[in-house]
Length: 311
Ligand SMILES: Nc1ncnc2c1ncn2[C@@H]1O[C@H](COP(=O)(O)OP(=O)(O)O)[C@@H](O)[C@H]1O
Ligand SMILES: [Mg+2]
Image 1 (spheres, rainbow, N blue to C red):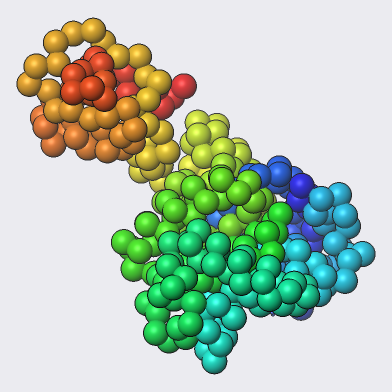
Image 2: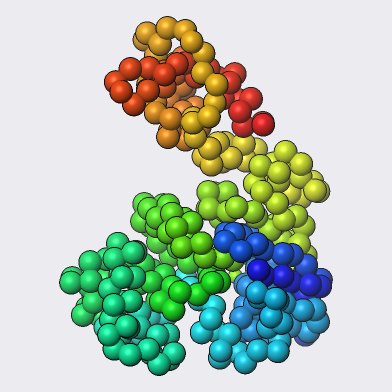
């Protein structure tokens, strides 16, 4: 779906992107992660030709982007950045309608799409459509930014630290909602962040970069269990295992058929990170898992939890 082959970009003496090759599958949410200045934004912007590369090739849907008109490319590829870039003098509805208008959609189709999108990102059109950006909170503006980028139903969405300016609570809520929306729509997403927690929570795969080079592109579990270089483990740090726990739930782990009496209870949907926290705070090395009918489906032991992550 998106394929970078030997992409290199220099600014004067500085090699911002150094011979990067990677292939992102259709419907995948791929993260570009790494320290500040490692080349994430430059790599991302090369995909919709906001940055022209020095050498290499980039394909989107088997079309060489270097042979496409940049304007046309940017209409087909959604783009969301941290500072949002909403037009302050336009209403929320007009902001979301930017690309459909460029594409020449009629008013009826555009309005229908705008309402649909505002609902999709959790903003009631009746309340928000006619407001201006300054009347919205940071989190609400960011939702409008996502709605605008999805307006023409792009197959590909590029996002550069889109939730970076939000307070932790709105940020977490938007991450979870965005992930669900992305899965539902099947949009292919390339998502830049320097936040490990965000990368591990959202990414199907993470491309870890350093000094313009791609170090490893894998599922978080693989980065954790089979790091390509010592940089990978040191970048993710000691808490990597705990972050991985947040990606998995209790569902699917074999439970013990022993008495759940006196144990704290969780559900099958509880994340393993929360399950571990519940074990620690209840002072026991086991939990009861509810069967959804008011009873217990069995007991999750600490040892089963630990082995489940390794597998
Ligand atoms: N327009 C530019 N002109 C000159 N240098 C740039 C420009 N854009 C990025 N760089 C440099 O390229 C390197 C990679 O930048 P960038 O891709 O923005 O990194 P990241 O997004 O990972 O923080 C940095 O050293 C940065 O200073
Ligand atoms: Mg950047």
